Image 1: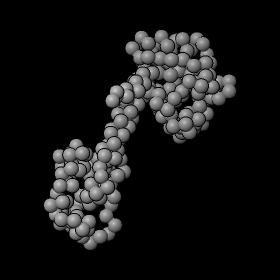
Image 2: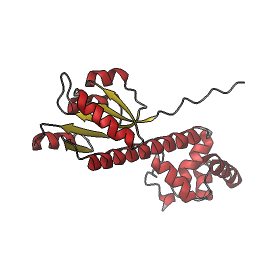
Image 3: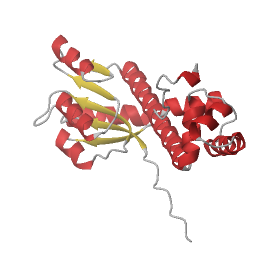
Image 4: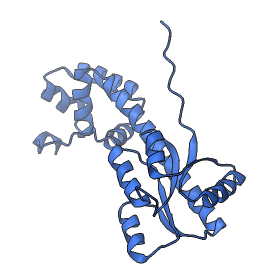
Length: 220
């Protein structure tokens, strides 16, 4: 059977949304000179027409534009599940705008004319943050796939192990032999690709798959 190819990873991109042609051109020059890929958009609506949930990189957006402004665009993206670290820029900044931008999750609020060094530092910060987010998402997906590969009985054993139960306690709870528990426990560790119970617990906690013991006296 022919293996289906994995979809190509999205290209890490600095997405610049601004209706000022001169500003877009200057920012493209600055970003490309520092070896980042950049795509520009003349409006928030232009960006929304081309955006996708799996976008990688960061967003640099003007706070005031015809149609949707930068903060409104950020709100739309949050609602769509597009999680791009966002830098809001403006030529008319004031404190209430900055507070609103930060409250809604923007990484920074920067006034024009830009300080090139500072802008590049913030872009690098946003790109690094997005890489970390994507690595975490891939890791969590991998852990969930490992969990999905467990049989129903192996998942029951895993839940008991995560609760700290000994093999005899697991055997009593599931009404199986200790030898059977040992076999299932070994398979769980193999399928989850861990070498210790501590690693197993950590993986389950990372994806919210750890079932806490509901006050059963056996766990004391």
